[in-house]
Amino acid sequence: MAWGLRRGNRPRMRVFFLLSLFLAALAGCGDQSSASKKLAYPYRVVTTVGMVTDIVRQVAGEKAKVEGIIGEGVDPHLYKPTRNDVAALLGGDAVFYSGLLLEGKMADTLVKVASQGKKVFAVTELIEEKYLLELPGSQGHYDPHVWMDVQAWMKAVEAVAKALSGFDPPNADHYQKNAQAYLQELAKLDGYVRGVIASIPERGRVLVTAHDAFSYFGRAYKIEVKGIQGISTESEAGLGDINRLVDFIVARGIRAVFVETSVPEKNVRALIEGAAARGKKVTVGGSLFSDAMGTAGTYEGTYIGMIDHNATVIARALGGEAPPRGMQGKLKAPVHAN
Image (tube, rainbow, N blue to C red):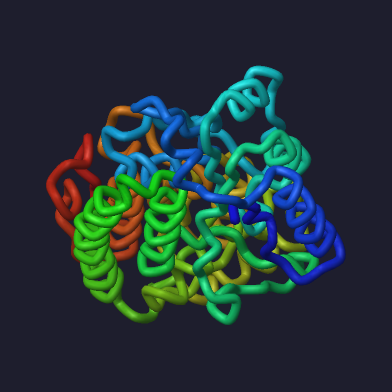
């Protein structure tokens, strides 16, 4: 069953859950193998954010052409699908999205696509509810930034393999084999991140960013995280929020804060200016990928490259040890330590 619009614990999400069940019943959840016989290879898969696009490509391999609609540097919290996006989604053989309300403004569009009989899959479906974070100020919704924890995103890879195996049963072994090979690479990435973050002196192991996208990263890799805005960039940081964070930075002697590629820098710059007014020099430790990956076709434009970049930049800026060009020596420019 390919409805997938079900994660959350508030009335709005219950409506999506019930509606998606209804739409799945209309579309039919019969013999998937009969549908797969009609596929022309490579069939077409349409995805939302880059992190989803990349893992679907890794698992699908040559069996599918995967097209992402939300590009680098674009904030998915605020993204509204264009008419071309809707046409692309309706024209795909299958659709994958992250879920957990990351693509909140696309919910109606995803329901519309499902109502047309398309197979729509949320890659976060296999992540156990008890693993998810529900943070203060999140209006009862779960934090959607699960890809920041590599082990959590490995469950997303498993979900993709399961979905594609059901969608195209004759090639199930192909999808499972690709997923297992990719999961081995992600296990190496997870180990690298743990090592470089652990090398940061404990007192300075604090990550201050533009918005609260790194809580899963902080929990997984044991680094304290402070975001200026909440988990959605729709929220606005007030002067009081910034002043409290400046107090924290000065008291803890934080040496660097971080901007994000998909979020304006103004609030981070306000932190730096506020700290300077109190005699504390704080620098920008680097630019991190949060809700979007790097440029397509580059190492940073892959999920592994995105996380490698983030971990390397954070570790070197906060006094830890990491190779200047990252885990595989593939970062496009050396990361300089502060």
